[in-house]
Image 1 (cartoon, rainbow, N blue to C red):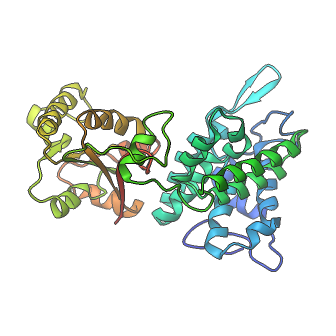
Image 2 (tube, helix red, strand yellow):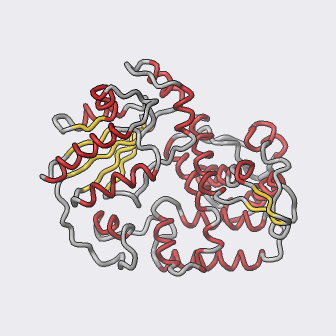
Image 3 (cartoon, rainbow, N blue to C red):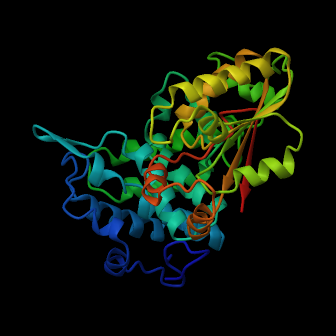
Length: 374
């Protein structure tokens, strides 16, 4: 097994062997899967540790996986290792049934932290996180009211052909009575993606504004261009404390009005550990002043979760602003070092807590999403 760009070791030809015991011993997040129960109906093979090992071996045996370039194999194998990483924290027993609600979405956040601390480049890390977040979807997208819309949304963050390979390994790496149906649904998922021309790349839209409106309104035709009545630009910064957001704003938005939550806290005498209602209220009023006259501006704060960004985007879009999210991404060691050099140091344990909620922005959220890797 060999490593690529700091990702976990990946099987190599000609034998494609998976040393599961060695992998488990190397990574505490794999060991944590031991003795985590699974529903005996859908996982008769046993605990989550056993299942993930079977998935990794199934992945290594797939001709479709072996045929991929080295980097794609490494990303897919990392996703197989991490796809159920949240089960130790989400699994609940209800009578004779076992459930792990939201383990995919929570698993994506855990996978992001794991790979960030391992020094995996953002581009590869986010591919893995997206695969983890969506790993269950090929099993049931075809059963949705609008499978095409689901496939289009998935394609904005995830290679759908890669997702089909991961789902195939997931289906093979278990003992269950409905494996044939799972494979049939995966094939139907692939067919929907092919119909929407989004199997190997994001579904294209006539314009950025069309894409933005499509994901905010149900029932729109993705091929009909939306009328663009936007004016001004709202730049929404995103990134952990110490990532370099202030530096990016000074360099790329010189002369722009900047709404800074840190600056407002100092002005209002509110500590970061205190209730932030007054700070947020003042910041929103500043934003509305710019939005009313169509003036471009920057909202500079961490905005690390989708829910936080969504509330601001709702305000900005209500004034027909063109919205750009700029996410600043910095390696873990560099970020903690830069944080120590800040005038207002954020306690490391606070950053650790933020990392456990960290969701990197994607194309379904704004007109433009810009990733900047420091």
